[in-house]
Amino acid sequence: MKILIKNIKKLVQVEDIIRLKVSGKEMSSLKTINNAFLYIKDDLISDFGEMKELAVKDYINEKDIKIIDASGKMVFPSFVDSHTHLVYAGSREIEYIDKIKGLSYEEIAKKGGGILNSAKLLQNTSEEELYEQALKRINEIIKQGTGAVEIKSGYGLDTENEIKMLKVIKRLNENTPLMIKSTFLAAHAVPEEYKDKQEEYVDYVINETLPIVAAEELADYIDVFCDKGFFTVKQTDRILLAGMKYGLKPKIHANELANSGGVQVGVKYNALSVDHLEYVGDEEIKALLNSETMPTVLPGAAFFLNLKYSPARKMIDAGLPIAIASDFNPGSSPSGNMKLMMSLGCINYKLLPEEVINATTINTAYAMGLSEEYGSIAKEKKANVFITKEIPSIEFMPYAYGSDLIDTVILNGIVL
Image (spheres, rainbow, N blue to C red):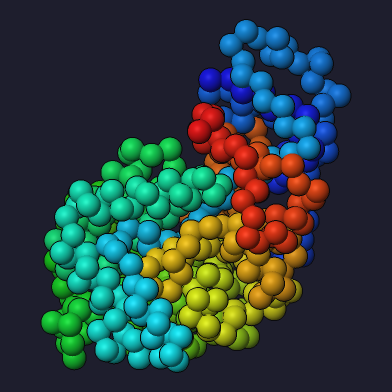
């Protein structure tokens, strides 16, 4: 399919030379083209530029080309959401009441809520029903502008149900237009039957579940919740090392509840990303500055759980890149709306609009190992873009936090 989008008010996040990530002061820089065009051929971005250049292009009069007039509208690269748990059974709004009454995340977990609650629900839900529930969420985030997403297991907590989750993720990747990456996260919590036997559960994950996941090629990455009350640095070290032997790239839940050492162990194993990062000090920043690991902030979780906010501003000022993902899950961030995450990034983390755009596109693509193909407008990158409604400026995107500003979604060169 050939698509020509013309009269674009502003073409956003343009790159002449593809960058893998944006760090430090560069995060406040965002290349745009006013009064632009974008030409898509098949599933790739083929050409773009100023409208005054379009008249000399040899493809403008092709008969089979679809022309979209974007007068007054802007075109952005699709969001990339590098951290979600959107395959889950049911919801956990009752725990929301516990939060309102003042119970902490840890207190809810200790009384059988949290991740263990989701595990019980998932274990009693068929693969087909799990798929149908997740498909509705996928369709929702597509309409909200997301073009690539990472989805974790971690609500199974036994071999059978972790495999069930990963098979659902695989089906979603095969049957939807999204680029989906899969993460094996059996070390999300310790099941009730392994209470006070955490090392035995780590052995079970490594020796029983992981080999099957690897043999059936169900995961791209391996993740561990390395934090206070969950898995220790030593246990995380063991699990990551085991996963890497099977070719799974590490990602880490780190420092959400305490200075857990999760950042350092993530850097040690060259993790693609370390995510959450509410508790980050000078030692963590120093470790990240000497690494290729992407610090990823999850504003939805901190907002919903009323946690302290990650020092994202301090990290950027120190020269680090920052990614922003949704953490879409039933307990701590029941939203995959990346435009909302941009708004939270500006309001609660004091990031500039240009910084949150970079954080939700090119840097989240890097956190999924996809920034050579996704996350910006560049020739030969995937044609994943969205056209806004008529808006006055790029700043309006995070400013109008409750408004639906997306008019048209194009994924893999197809108008949805």
